[in-house]
Image (cartoon, rainbow, N blue to C red; front, side):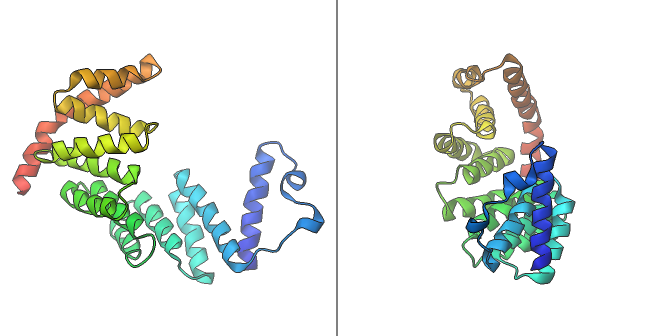
Length: 237
């Protein structure tokens, strides 16, 4: 446990030093207010550092810390989630799916289903991705992230899934109007269904000309690839 505390403290101090702060003044509380971390708090703190590495795209570093954590600590559901994310980031798909599957009987089951869906998507198995994203949405219907993932997977499958994708992406946007990813996917589905006026209205809400052009170009490029996606999905049926 002491090794974990030392590692976290070192990272915290380094981060403060990089930004020109006095680590002692910025981090250390007054002596009479110091409270020792219990085992659960220390574990969460350690895993929060790992989560930060994953958010920075430093998946291999995250895996190293997770391996160290596994030597000394119990593998909690949060550990399994982070392990799956780090494995997915390093394209270890089977291992990532196994880690996410380990969440089935925990409170993080929806995250596990969403994680497996992302593994399937990364492998190009969009039908499998739809199946798992749908299960994630069923487990947590108010998640804009899960709805967005499901909508994009349905777009990628094409065919009868397009109308369902539109519904899910509209619902996702109502839940999270500020999401750029949801907006971009909704623009695609609107263009696919011939609702160009509404698509242009969404595009007009983008603050900069450059970003508007990039989103429009991305959507147009995506649509050009759609016939190939449909052909591939038909071959699989």
